[in-house]
Each structure stands twice: as structure tokens, then as C-alpha cells.
Image (tube, rainbow, N blue to C red; front, top):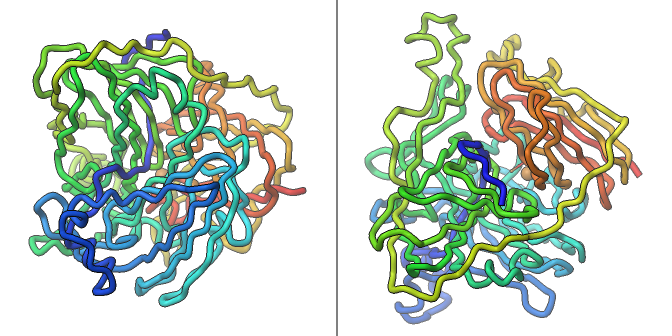
Length: 490
Ligand code: C2O
Ligand code: CU
Ligand code: CU
């Protein structure tokens, strides 16, 4: 087992089990369906494939929901926050009949899934208008790795706002990792992390120019739509947490009192062996899977979100504006409690797995590209966020790569804030950070590039040709221009 202390991880996405509340359910079903109240409470909001087909209707609309005991008015899929969890296996066909009942255009992006980027699959250039219905349909490749993925809207200019309204759900691909005996024996939980900025009535607050520059954040943090939920774990057992940072901008730096984490998977699937960690860092969009050993004294332990400085915009008005970066620095000092773990009656001890999956070494690439992340002022637009000096232009093709080749990309952050860099459709491996080789191989689709840092990644462009995007997953930055078009050419 590899041991890396204080190593930080970034991940984003999420939703969790648990699920919908009565009020959501009633809204979703309307008068048409009269199931018993029993069934309505804690509706598992889970849609699984059967006989190779995952078929589901999703509707985006503005609805009242409950976040714990707090009333809120949010954007939902099927009236639920987080959205229904979708589950399929490699090789399955997926059919989603999607209806937009929002007042804005929207669409669905399947973050992390390796599927076509064109037509009615993972096509982020679709604009589904209010009241329109669109049928998504695709096949998950036979050799897709088991992974914790997610779905959310992706219409450029509206992504942060719609995600922050609550539109996010888990998309789970089952397979290899789930079949490892120790992992199978572990108790599986999903933790979809979201934050919300609500007023006293539960309405979404409007954002200021400054909060959008920094990336919008809210004070109300929820795990699976609840503030501080309790997870139980049998004493001596193993807990498998599959964590998604589904916040548009907030970073999560997680620690569990008296416990360590054993990292088993990142964005794109399982590692070669568990990695022992004290803390987990998840930037927006990232996912991680960890095992937790319940071998401490019986009791209750808190999952804490520790402070993390993701940089700020002191540069906007020079150092003077309320003390340099202070003004837009977003995390306060006190740790907050995200969830509680409670020990149940004991079971026979379950050991940690020693070996997980094989993570192949990617051959070195001759094609190296450089992407510089920064920000600047644009006439008439104010602050813009840039890749290689340019804000996103939907009509410009920024990067063309050849299908079935491997490339090295060097992502250089010369700005004053951290930027999680995300590429659609293909998982990559981090090669090095500031020239230092990454300590282990892992599949990622989103990688944190800290202020001043250079991260080198290696990307195989496999199976699917077409046009898609890469961008900063602080989604306000994406909406403000930190995105590029990518064409994978046949
Ligand atoms: Cu999670 Cu382009 O997005
Ligand atoms: Cu994505
Ligand atoms: Cu950014």
C-alpha cells in the first residue's frame, strides 16, 4: 500500500443515495400517480439499467424542494435535488427522454462518460429550448471502466447558474472495481456535495459581479441534499464513499475525525492499489472513491470541510481592495461539519483490498501542447477568463487532434486563482506537477492546476471523433471564457 500523507486531491460532482422528499415526489408525479405515502418518503430516486437498457424520463424545472428541513426553491431534475441517480453497466444502451421546463435553454452533459460527443449523445452544443423534449441515446462502450460520473447542464453562459440552482446527478457505471471482493463487502454510499446561496424564504440569491469573478459559492452545504446527514457503518466493517464535487466553484478539503481514507478510485475509475490519505481535496467536477475502516472506538465522528485557499482577485483593484485577495477569497477559517459517521453493531472485520485494477502506462507522446490559464479585461465585458490569451469563441476551432493518438498537454496557470482543468469525453493521466512525477497512475478528467503551477497530462483520444470542449470547471470561469473548442479528427 502506498502512503502519501497530506497529499491533496481535487474532485467534483455528485449526488447521493437517499433521495427525494415527499414534496419533491408529489411535484414530480403530479396527480397522475397515487402511490402510498410510505413509498413516497425517501424515494430511492435510482434508475438502473435492466437487460442492457437504461431508460428514463428526465424533466428540468423550477420546483420547491426540502434541503433537510429547509424549504428551498431550486432547479431540479424530476423535482429532486440532487437529481435521480442513474446506473448502468459497460455495454448498456442508454435512452433519456429529456424535457426542458426551465425558462432558459439547457441540455445534458455526461461528465466523464466515454461516449460519442456528437448527435444525441454527449453533445454540449445542443440548445434545448424551453418546453422542448429531446431524446438522448447512446451506448456505453463494452470496455468502459467502472466509475463515478455525473450529469449536469452545459449551455455556455448558463452553466454556473443552472448547476448552482441544483441541476446535478450521479451517473454510475458498474463493473470491474465493484467486483473486487473487499469492495463488494464494503458498505457503499454516495456523497454528492453541493452548496447553495438562499435567502430567508429559500429563494436563490442573485450574484454580484465580484462573486461571479471568484466563482459563486453558497453558505449552505449539503451532502445528498441534506445538511449534515448521518452515515452508519458496522463496527469493524468497511465503508466505501463515492464522493462528487457538484458545486460550481467550491472546493472541498475533507477530513474524517480519527480516521484515514484509502483512496481506491479517481474520476475515471480504479487505481492499482489503495493509497492512504489523511485528507481529500476535491475541486469542482472531481470525484474520488475511498474506503474507510471502522476500527476505532464506537461513537460518532464528524466529516469536516477544512479551509482551503483557492486564490482570490486582489488583483482586480490592486492590493488595496479589502486587503488583497481577502475580498474574494472564499473560504473562511473555521472547519464546517458536512456529515456524521455513526458506528453500528459489529461485524466480522473486513480487510482492505491489497490490489485493485491495472492502470496501464500510456506511451510517451511527441505531440505536446501548451495551455495557459489566465484572466484579463475585455472592452465592454469587464473581466474575462482566458486560455492562451483568448476568451471562448464558439465559432473558433482552438485545438485539433487526431483520433486514436495520444498527446501531452501542459496546463500552465499564470493567474492568481486555482483552476480545475477539465476535458470532455476522454480520461487522461497526470504525468507531473511542476516537473515532479505524479506518485501513482490514475484516470482523471479534471485536474487542479493551482496558482503558478504547471501540470502535464497525457490524453488518449479514443473511439469517438467530433467536436467538444475543454474548460475550467469553476463554471463561472467557463461561462466567462475559460473554455476552448476541441476537434477530434478522423
Ligand atoms: Cu462537468 Cu464541461 O463539464
Ligand atoms: Cu464534463
Ligand atoms: Cu477557473
